Image (cartoon, rainbow, N blue to C red; front, side, top):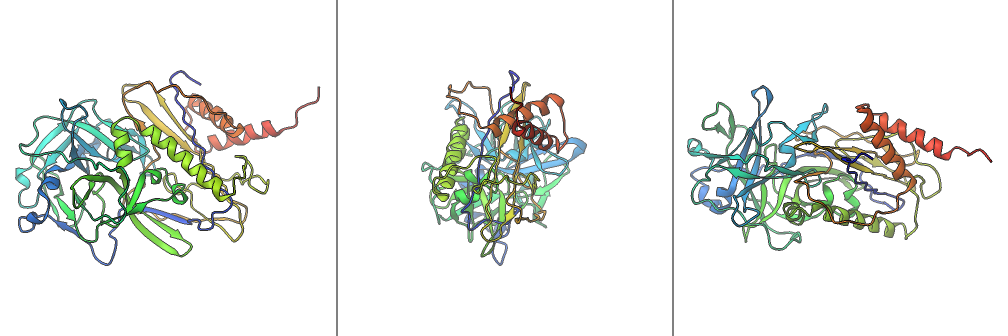
Length: 454
């Protein structure tokens, strides 16, 4: 491997025993329930919104190529060091480049931070009074895994505004009442930004029918890379809500960061949830320790799957009945495989995530996903597009810090083949979608070919 190539391989195996296999995944940000509970904050109702939350909730605006505007919600949080400046917490995908499929990539827009403004107090009937700050150069740091971003504010903050605190308890409080102040793109709720021609959403709130449901379970983690670090909630969101904080109704502490929603079809029907990156991952990301949580989640998933199959070990290249899995890959959405299984069919879901960074001032990150399907009689369902683009797989962009030395795990043959093909693809600078598939097939054939007797 090249000196500047850093690879992390996570192998997640979904094996026999998954009786409630999800068969459809669809992404968006949803109005849940019979009515839209998002309200515009105006003079007549502003007293119903906790002032601390309203003051710290911001709209983040980045001017990109062609004069277009990219916007998200965000929250003012405390500095990393007591003597430092306050920071803004939001989503990675708010600053990400888009691929040909309009989905966010690991790499950041060239205008990220340099063309970013943050507006405080952008309220209906008070929009002209909104005040702005910038993004401190080179302070932007993002996590692809948890879809998080943080940066230091540049310039004088409005007087009297205090940052929101992160929840002290890192556990997700099930059935906890919450609230959200955000900037969703809803008709008739826009105004002109000070000093700009663009009309953008003013501050809005979700107060009714807004509570934490629970963490996503290990059985759901395999549907998307962000789910191990997220929880479900019932608070209404829509496009533009991304990056907002979901706040404890009682303590006014941040419980998580909204990134969108997900619809999953279970055996007993479709269920929709909105989702937020949970506070335990947020804290780890801010403390540069998120890789520890990622590794822990991988171990927990593997233990869960081992328990489901009774501790039986199955190789990465064989199913539990000894047969080879199909080689055709079906990728649905952004890093999501959705499969429906007939009775008694055995599944294998092999997800090697190769994350590598090439040297530059801002690390250029990429990740490749290989998803192996189920048995021959399993069908692959389609995923319907939604208004909110699906989120990309995980990677953290942060200042270079030497990690503690760890013992290298023993690599399987499949992992070695994957790493070799990954290096070849990087060397070839190939963007051919089938390059990795062909390389792995050829490598497997060579490995399985009978060796000539001496």
